[in-house]
Length: 281
Image 1: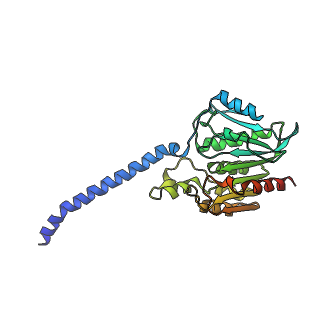
Image 2 (image 1 turned 90 degrees about the horizontal axis):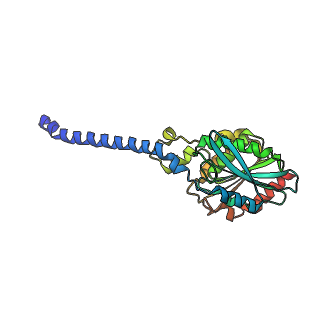
Image 3 (image 1 turned 180 degrees about the vertical axis):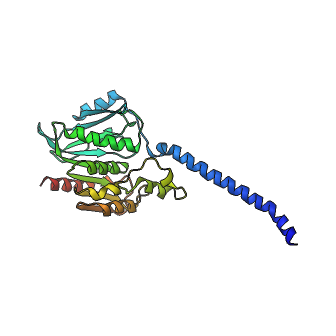
């Protein structure tokens, strides 16, 4: 009877083994697909013609900044804040789908300049976006901005939104900045990915790591950070982890009921103004 039972079960065992092989192969295939498609999932660039870009800058009184790096042209702008004298300046880094030319008339306090970099592959910038390229470009852009006569290079504040928070922190870890402003920050980009794809080994397949939590303990500049407790894109726990790792003084605002894209429609402007005014003292 035992022999018959084993014989009866053998087709079932073979079917189970085949099923496991199919499932395993499918899982590996999905991992391979995510590895190859992650740039498409992470970066969402928009285009703008160079003529239209220059027209928008001119209309706002902003000057173009262009850097040629590794075969790509990275473009941005600065809108001077001083009347012919070097002024403190906010340097902005946008989200993964943001059109930074929409910020060319961004409000900043009187006497402050405003600058922004368009990531490579975004808008008027050429090339292909990647985490490594964006981080390297951001430091070079800071250097170019700090050398301009209308900018006080010792009083530059980096400001980042979402993906741009990692870029703003990276610059602050490589260059002396007056302060850092972050909206919806994260600790590691791979950890955000793991939150969204808990069934994938994200840390093993992720090729675009940005890890501000590693750089934060070396930054003594003051930090102003906002995070909504209803953020489903970057959970607030990610921002808290970065906050807790920060070396310098921290002003942290958790906004009840706010999500990922509505932080600037809350108390941001008043707190932002107070933060910049405090830096001028």
